[in-house]
Amino acid sequence: MGVPFAGSPRPTLGVEWEIALVDSTTRDLSNTAAAVFDAVGELVDKPRVTKELLRNTVEFVTGICDTVGEAIDDLSETMSLVRRAANPLGVDLMCAGTHPFARWSTQLLTRTPHYDELIERTQWWGRQMLIWGVHVHVGISSREKMFPILNALLLKYPHLLALSASSPMWTGVDTGYASNRALMFQQLPTAGLPFQFENWGQFEGYVHDQLTTGVIADLAGLHWDIRPAPRWGTIEVRVCDGISTRTELSALVALIHCLVVYLDTRLDAGETLPSMPPWHVQENKWRAARYGLDAEVILGADNRERLVTDDLYDLLEKLTPTAVRLGCAEELARVADIPRRGASYQRQRKVAAATGGDVRAVVASLVNELDT
Image 1 (cartoon, rainbow, N blue to C red):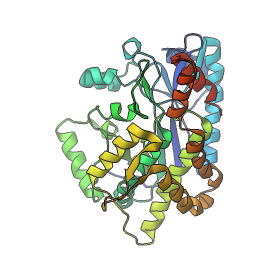
Image 2: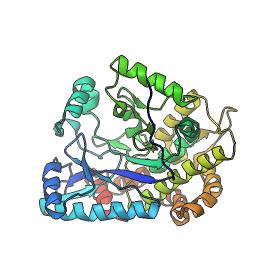
Image 3: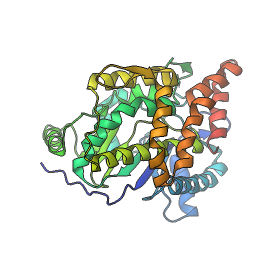
Image 4: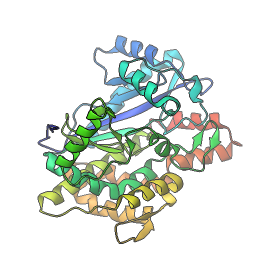
């Protein structure tokens, strides 16, 4: 079957930022999304806030943006609005890949036909999805570019995951992983790493098979870490854990925007983009999830390995001219600050160590740093 692709005449940008609602006293998750939405609706007619599977979550969604600065300003405006609605309810906002101590069994679900079907199908694993992430859309002009760009992006998958990793704890226990979320989410059917198709026609054949056999009801059922978004004419990068601060969000959105545009430009110049065997991609995902910024990653089919942060600094230098062209050089430069400051998973562990393992103090630190 044919899968039409809208195409984007320019490399537009859209960001979805999943935010957890936290009780301001207990620091546990708060199943108050419905009340927060009602309060937001009283403040503005058409807020850029959407519901998610769990009623402890709201999602901030930008409009169609041209620059990172525009997208972050859009999200900041939404955050201010939601804060005004949530504060009188005794609810704070927090973002991380997981909540440090909440239990999935006490969370309430948002009832929609789509979510009901998801839980009916996935059962225990679906109920376990107490996780948050960031999704970044970048416009691509034609469908022929989609899989060369997607396959090449997989070489930088561990960089994005290690920088954003923010889910070291689960139900009050340190898992030993920098990103427990990444490995949990892939337990769902059609979630996890994408297939590396050579062209759009192969993807259309795959979609036909999935629809015919009832694996998915529509394209939204593909929950890949990086996926085409044909309706919007974008590639959607869903690798990142929930990003804990606004500054880090701006940095990682800039990195993703620059990566996609840089690869797109190379295609236009007639280059063949690099790819990596799927077994190396899978191993890199695990290494980044386990070790974060200390991961030794595989660089390509020739089996070379390098510390992810060392490779990152070279990547930032390579992307700087693209960042200048896109007007996000300042935001891209902030990526280098993340290893120096410590990624969110490292900061969370530092707070836990300093407070004798007080996971509520960890939540408090996440609440306090969201706006920074």
